Length: 329
Image 1 (cartoon, rainbow, N blue to C red):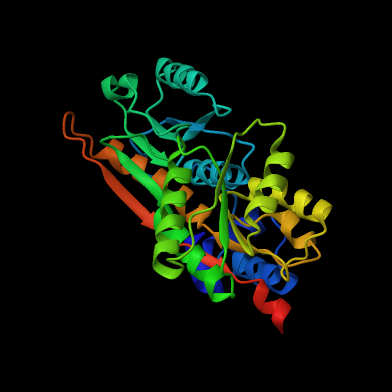
Image 2 (cartoon, rainbow, N blue to C red):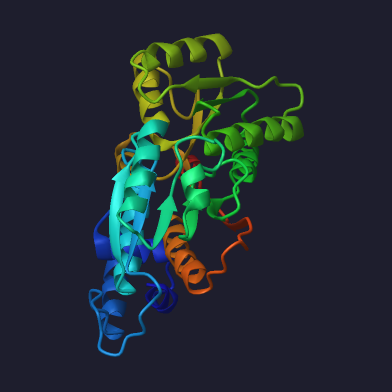
């Protein structure tokens, strides 16, 4: 996919969307990618005679909550890259439940997987079973506290600083943040970045943060009360799922976007294309993260040295899709 993206002059993410049909791509871009696929003789991955065998036969992938849009593309990418390397994938979803995550880890280890890629539920100490296990572990999107393995993701705090700066640049003077519990690593870091962004760009404004729970049924009322109390003119949403919940509230309240409220959310999603108003996006290179996670777990398996594990972080840059720009023109 990297070769195809380079020749076509598009991102790896775009190539992945065209191949896997996980998101609509502009017709001209899609045709360009398809022509490039044909020119380079791309075929769906399969074992090839003489292909070098990796140190892995099968890996386990454990996500925090597959309902999050981010993980759907991430898992698809991991499976594709693993298949290209003749590696089987076992998948489990922890459903935002730390006890279920512990069971999933135990099950994977009992099944004898050769490596693990995990998006942890909470920012908690590195699980003892993983410390004792003689398998390479790569963390994606989220981290455990005080671990000594590899993490692949983004600099969440820095991305939220950039997001806050973006909203200030759009003329916002009272910016709020909607997120989940800060027991989640990504949310902890994004809230910290939002606070730092305010200190840097709006030092007179106190932070306005709303924490929601994944399964909270009265989130509509909490978001509505938050908007009524703080009257923000800009909002940073910690996930696209939170943005989805926000949209139903602002439409019920009759708020105009972007006149009354400008919105910036993490992670682009298909449904955003169908809104009648612009919502800008902090987009993560999910495909690149998935590719790197598989490559890293292969490297760890091939260069395995018992007792010499060190914490490493592989961080990718984010991009801001400025949809407000089109609304101004």
